[in-house]
Picture 1 (spheres, rainbow, N blue to C red):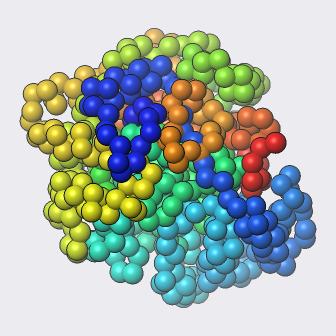
Picture 2 (picture 1 turned 45 degrees about the horizontal axis):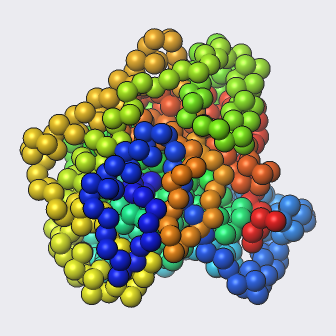
Picture 3 (picture 1 turned 60 degrees about the vertical axis):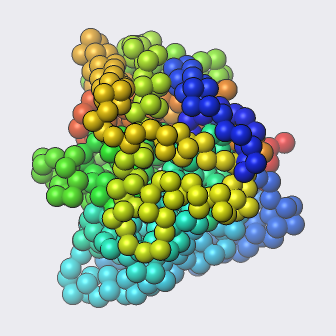
Length: 572
């Protein structure tokens, strides 16, 4: 969840803003379509030492210098550049014996050990990862191969796993939690042959604990850093998933989103993110904010990988009544380089405000659409959004209390049993949990009834969802569109662990698809100041993933806008 709240000084000893003031600020900033966040500088000596290690991590490959002075060769395994290779390339390489899953998994584990001290993107690696890879290699030798056979995957640390791999939501309060069963999407990954590599850092409690906060910070994992410029923020809440994908610390990663938490960090780290239609991917075993908006989705370096992962994790789950039958959708079939030809795409330009880098990137994207045969409808507007933000926030507070209490009550282990217990835990451990920021959103959620039959809650939820759906449905219908194009993000802001995230200038288009439950895909599109990644989002109506994936793939192939991270300590 992109952090809902104003920028005020936070911390354990500070008074929380009132619910009314937070609500008003959140509404104003959401209605304007603007969002922002800030990053923790690394000590120069540490930065120099780790970059030197990055430069030395190479496996039988030629040297290629990138713009930061680090070596591109650190992403090569047996001559294959893992930064550019898709999961299909990895499968072919393993099928032909170029390397096996054990070698691939060991490569990522070694790379995490060397590179992640710069980034803080991985909370925990899986002690059983190499054994899982060994089992995958045995299956391959005996003719068994799933769609993601032997592919190492990092999971956001709010997705349940069993065994030695903890699930904490970034909170010390859940270190003793022991989920009885893995999330359904993890079961789907395992059924496809994937290797669970570990857990990615995140904004604690998916950015729904405090306002203000610093996106990408958690008490368990610390502050995640943007891999392009390390003192810049990675956005949130799937911060570690996006950063790890960008830095080639895993083949693919999984994030979750309530509003912006997949697409924003994907945009900020120059990678691809898909926020699926609500009901396509199960949420059982995912620590919740809201059953009305939560979903999980892939964050990857390519549209091909995102399509492959989404195809694997989709499916009907009896534990999640929102999931709907529809057969396994083959999203790889949507990967057509000429998918833009003949399509009608509306451009939601006003959301960019006056950000020159974003507008220039959007102009270039529009030119690409036209050059590839799409009909562009300029300056479409998603109407009625002014009232969505306030209603969404009101509804989320009630849903968070209800849904989180249910999750905690059902999860074995030593941990607080409800939201009130979490608030008390944080107060007892203020020196760590509340070191930088408070728990204003926890307190506001606790003050609600938590009753999903409450008339005031129902009115807020119905209003938010209906307005968001109408905004997308009406513009698509009125202009006969296949999709809407919008900017994903503006250039990453400086991280600020004193004042928290600054909402005043950041561009975001995440709310309409998030609140409506409709899909969106973000694809790298350009850079702010030639360094900080910018993305564009294709959004559409319910279950239009195949169309959006096709458009995103054709755009990606036409632009090749993604560049590997630079690992700069700061901008000049």
